[in-house]
Length: 296
Length: 182
Image (cartoon, rainbow over all chains, first blue to last red; front, side, top):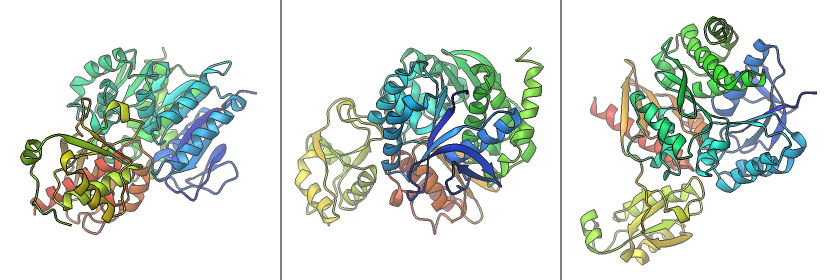
């Protein structure tokens, strides 16, 4: 039996305890194991919903999720870190996508060090709060993929910044600065081996070398919609689960996320849940397009 | 409570000597402490802690150290007790203070640090919140989206993390921009 792919994150409801299980997308809601269905508005449920939709398109099983209720106090995240550190060896996932978790350095280090003791180190993907902790830990180079936006890339490039809120000088980084920031992030140990930088043009980098650029189609309203970064990370995760190489998975997911904008013609007031139903079509088109270019 | 010596300006506090930092158990307490001290007339700033005090999603309140007893009294009145107080040393980081505003026609998006808030211009209704990575961002989004800037609670009232503090800045800037446009 193939070992599972694990997605770890939170939901903004502290009455939800720890939930672990195989995910399913049912009538637009997310179910984790036998637990009550969760609404898909943004954050980790949006990532998982996008991942589930993409796995169906790819004909592969859905991921296993570990979800904690945490509205920001960090208690739910703490339980998730402790559970992971205790159960990771038994679960032995082949990949882990870390998402909205309270950026707690001690919690990060326990999980990271446990992952290093597995007989086969899982592929490690980090986004959102856990990416902040991974950068601060000084272990970023041992991660396979981070998915920052341009501002978060500036944070990764600032070796002193503990959080994007304190990034010196260049948090509102323009795309022209991206390559400089990526190089600095890699050289100062703030970047994972691969970066998928989300912006007006999406970039796929390996050790600060640009492998792919994806600049169209453009739908400016997508930047305002909370959760569009989550759908992107969800689709990348699904493609990695299907065995795709990291650069091609990133480029394909980035194109699919842009095609979501084209297919749905959203306004800045659109909710991300309205996009998720279009993921199968967007992903199919992106795979077809990339088969003619990247995969040849 | 108002201080007997009146409002301290930045210039005065610098002249009066060393600055100090107060660390708190939760970021939410930092936000409340900043508000209480500002209301009492202290010249305070929320800053990134020096490296030896960092544990993750941190911030501290920088204040004029000479007024520590008065500052502690102000905080005690609102039920807040700092975990630690220390003089400012090297390595303090200033928060991001730049905003970027994007005009989408009927909607306006304001970005502060890593957080973005989008509002409908005519009604002031918050239609989307994006960015950030801390777990209170989805919680705040559920609380704010659909409400107007006028009727919505400020993110600082319920936020717990640095992302919520950035959202508070974006929220206040959106209010200022819409008000200025009337």
